[in-house]
Length: 127
Image (cartoon, rainbow, N blue to C red; front, side, top):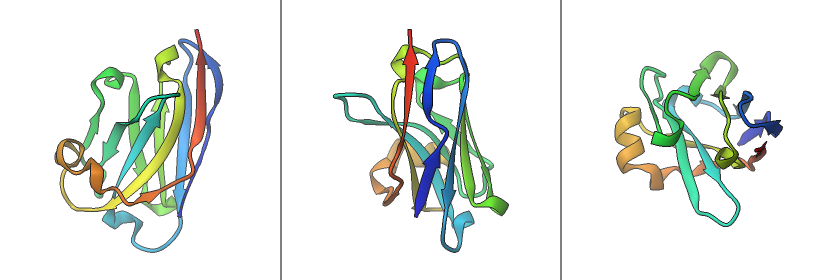
C-alpha cells in the first residue's frame, strides 16, 4: 500500500514537497515513481528512482526543478518541487515496480509495468 501526502494550493514560483509512505516488506526491492495527472489529460511520469536510489530520471519539463529521493529506513519516497508552474497542477500519484533496472531504463521502457499505486494527492499551482 502506498499513501501520498503533502499536496496543496501554492502560488507559481513556490516550492512543495510530497511524501509517499509504503507499507509491506521489501520496499528497497522496488523502483518508485511519481506520476502526475492534469485535469483532462493522461497520466505523465514525472520522476523515477531506482531500487537502490543511485539513479533517477525525470520528465524533461521538470528537470532542474523537481528532485525525487527515497529513505528506505522510513519506507518513504519524496518529491521536492521547486519553482512550481501553473502547468504542474494535477493529481500526483506514487507508484512502485519491483525491478532492479536503472531509473533511466525504467523511465524509457517500463513505465507501463508499475503495478502498485497510491490514491494520489492534489497539487494546485495558481498563476
